[in-house]
Amino acid sequence: MMNLVRLVLIFCVLGVGVPVQAEEEFREFKPATGNAINAYIKDFDAKRDMVTLKLYNGRTQTVPVAAFCEADQSFIRDWPYVDAFMSIKKLRVYLDEPKRISKWHKETWGLFLGREDPKHLLTRDFKRMVYPIRVVNSSEIDMTNVTVKCCVYSKHERIDHAVEQEVVDLMTTPKKHVIELIKAKGNLKFDSQSVVLITKEFAPVNNIEYMDGDCRRQDAWMEGIVIRFCWTTPGGQELVREQRYPKNLSERQYKWAEPTGEEMEAEYDETSNFGAPKNTWSDDEMSDDDDGT
Image (cartoon, rainbow, N blue to C red; front, side):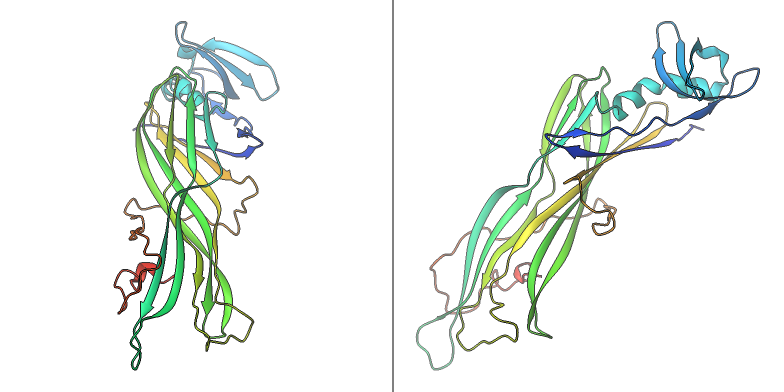
């Protein structure tokens, strides 16, 4: 049975995207004979089959891999893959400011009894946003079937009709997908799952009054993203890296929602209908997807 070890490296973006590295974790290595050694791997020479260990007392020791038990030998020979994936110098992940990939405008018109002309009932402006992601692999290791999990956080204003006041909802949008190959000495770019924001919602009806001022204008905005890269090495070790943007994104407020892989991105009719009166309610404009919740 493969030795499954979960290693977690949590880092954040500083300045232009340089992450902070976690401290090395010590583990117990068991020689074929003698006492166990508490250390971590500093280097591994595959040609000579020699491993350099950093001991708990601060000293460095280079010994043959064959001196250890079979499980530790497998762990040591798997170390180059662990180092390539977990090292922030060899595998860099950059997150940028959210960008808009589309926008559109919707107007809803209705025909009232006793009126010949339609009346303008509702105006909505939409935009679809994503977080650009860039991965740079400067190691000699090809990384196959890397699972990427994301949680995108956004805030949306709406009217709480129970109290006739404006409130702000936090929305978490999870998703995961698999990168078939992060090539050695290569890089790739991709976007996070998209989020649709209603950047303006205005009901130009004169006889509507609210208890707390003019609550007819609403807004929405992107708050941040948490991304996790998950990879199983050839030796069976399960590795996880996590990155947050912005760096001060609170773990308590912005909770992780584990993606199921069955998430679907919201579908919208992105055709603008500015200045096009309707004699009846449009199914597209009154669908559940467009209700602003």
